[in-house]
Image (cartoon, rainbow, N blue to C red; front, side, top):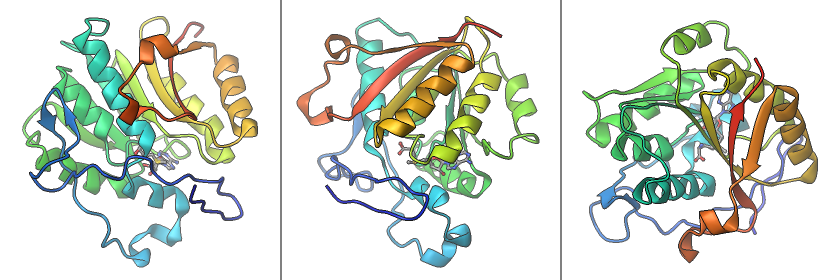
Length: 249
Ligand SMILES: C[S@@+](CC[C@H](N)C(=O)[O-])C[C@H]1O[C@@H](n2cnc3c(N)ncnc32)[C@H](O)[C@@H]1O
């Protein structure tokens, strides 16, 4: 396990799935329903490009395991007719490389809004274009969970959202409360379904996360091993998918 540490950053595991080629049209691509997903290389990202050398923003430039696991789970659910994105509105928070969003558009969603902090939005726009979705109902929009006053009313207006997607969005404790506030504001009680693909890094942050979710009136369940049942190459011990709905306003 490779680790990264700083005063406020939890242990971050290296990716289990580095072998997928998102760039060229050669073999071993990451595909959803046989359609390859393309990404730009961020390897040439310079430390100075990252605002204030901010670790939270830097995380947007990697593909995290949870995003691939969530995408494959959504594909499986759709193909088994347990989930139907047709005619549905999907929003992703802390999207970074945006793979679950791109996957949900491939799987038939009628509107996909991909959000991250403002500085990451141009990168998401590039990904949308690279995948040929620039004139489709796929949009990149700013949404900073901490400073969301300006952006969130617009996004709430574009709802009601049928699905909120979130992959690997819990890795520093101070973001947990603003994240849960954000998804609570975006969701319509007893309507919006949350798919959260979560990688456990510490039991402390898990407790903070699930306490916050419960305190905000959400009912959330871990997707069982039976239901998840992904191909071995998309399994990872400390990554789980949770499905939830906000029940109380
Ligand atoms: C660990 S990465 C996960 C990225 C992507 N979901 C994935 O799984 O590959 C965390 C993401 O949260 C975003 N993020 C960090 N702080 C944020 C904030 N205050 N508001 C919104 N997004 C934030 C980062 O820019 C990054 O894209």
